Image (tube, rainbow, N blue to C red; front, side, top):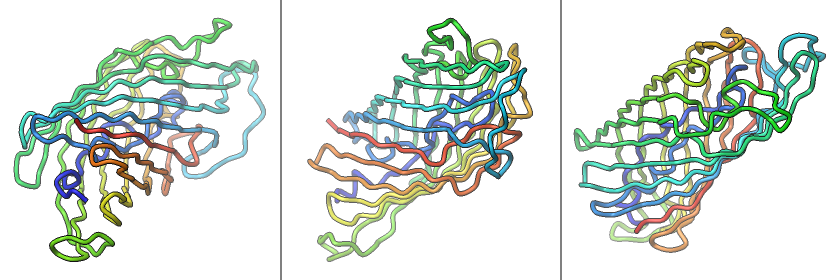
Length: 320
C-alpha cells in the first residue's frame, strides 16, 4: 500500500446522515466522505464518482419500529422513500497543507405517502445541491475544514399529476448550508499480508473528527435543524491493493423550522449512530473501487417517521 496515498483519512462526513423526520423523509445521504481515501498530492487532481442507495421503508417511533396504522382521512402518512444519488467530486492539492474540492450530485428519488386518504406517488430526477470545500492543516495531525452547500438543485417536488409533496422530496433544498470541521488523524503500525522494509508491518490510518453544520432557509422557508457529527474510522491494509474499511458515525440534529409548510415540527430531528464497514480494491496504482454498508446501531427520532434498515455507498476513485 502507498502509505502517502492512504495516510490522510479526514472529514468522515460533510454530508448529513439519513434524515428520517416526517418533513425530511426524502432528504437522505450517507454520512461517509469518500474523498478522505483519495486526497490529492500537491499539484494533483483526484476524482470520485459515487453512488448511494437508501431505502426508507421502516416506520419508527422514537427508538422502536412500529406497525403502520390505517391511512388517515386527514393529514399525511409516509410510506416509503427510495434515494439513489450519484455524485461527482473533484479535489485539487494546492499544497501539502491545503486542498480544495467541489461536488455535484444527481438525485433520483421515489416517494409514496397517503395525503388526506389519497395514495400518492412521486418520482423526481434532477441535479441536486452542489458544494465547495477547503481543508487546511493547522498542526501536523490536526486539520480544519469549511464546506458550503449551495442551492443549485431542482426545487420542484410535484409529480406527473401535478400533486406537490413536501419540499425536501425535491432534489435541491433551496438553502445555503455551512459546515465547519476539525479532525485529528494519525497512523498506527499493524500486521498485514503486505511485505515492505518493516516486514509484514504496514501503516493503518485512523481519525477522529467533529463537524458542525448550520442549515439555512430553503423552499417555502423550510430550514432543516442544525447538526453535530462525531466520526471515527480506520483503513486496515490487508494487501497493497486491498483494504478493509470501517467507520463509526454519530449524528444529532435539532428539530426543523417548518416555515410555510404544514409539516409537524415535533416529527423532525433526532440522534443516530451507524457502523459502516467496507472494502476497497485498487486495480491500478491510480484507480480504485470501494464500497460500504451502513448499519444503524442506534436511532432515536422525534415523533413518528420512516427510516432505513441499512444504506449502501460505493464508487470509483481516480487520481491524475
